[in-house]
Length: 112
Image (cartoon, rainbow, N blue to C red; front, top):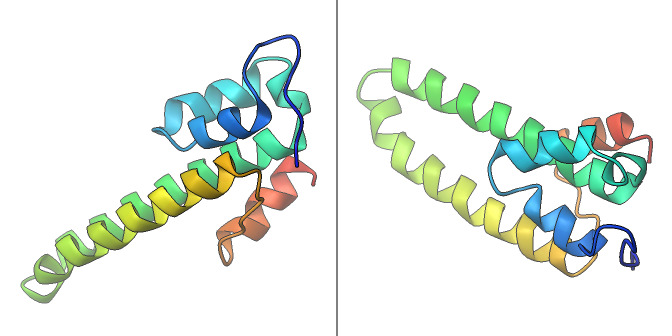
């Protein structure tokens, strides 16, 4: 389990979970020290960014598909919400929960 970051007062688990709250904290954690040196926080930041990009891309594609796409949008949005909550809870517990494809990309970017 990752240990607390002494300089910032914010534990690694809290920072990892906070990375999923919009894309802004994820980008900040990748830029600001000491967070950008921690592979656990970098992993969750990159996974959050890739998840946001995937969600936007999927919503754009579904939005362009008449009727069937429009019907699927609320269900896909609900699935992304559930996934987002799971990722936040896993990060708070100190787990490095990897999503398929996105998790591998995040791990590669984080250097984990």
